[in-house]
Amino acid sequence: MLTCALSISALLTVTIFPEKNWFTCPTAILGKLYSNTLLVSLNNRISLREESNTHVSTIHGDKIAFAV
Image (tube, rainbow, N blue to C red; front, top):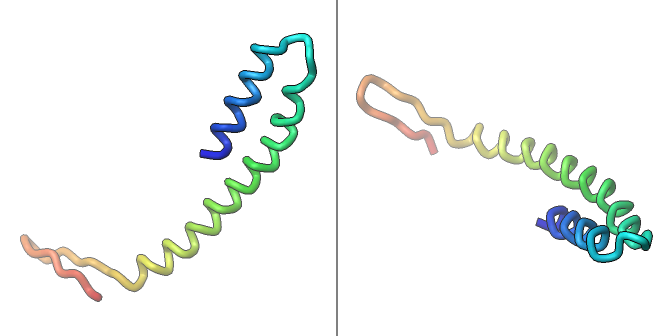
């Protein structure tokens, strides 16, 4: 969400002020923000994997059993 808002602000500064270099400020921050977003999503996979290991579901024929 924050990356989208920053990208839109960079796009708006380019279109509104094409002769100024004001768009460089949001675009300089945008690369770091994308890196942090990638690291957060990779770290979130670890917690989701640990959570999914505790809640195992099995299917036997027509019945579904959930282990808690």
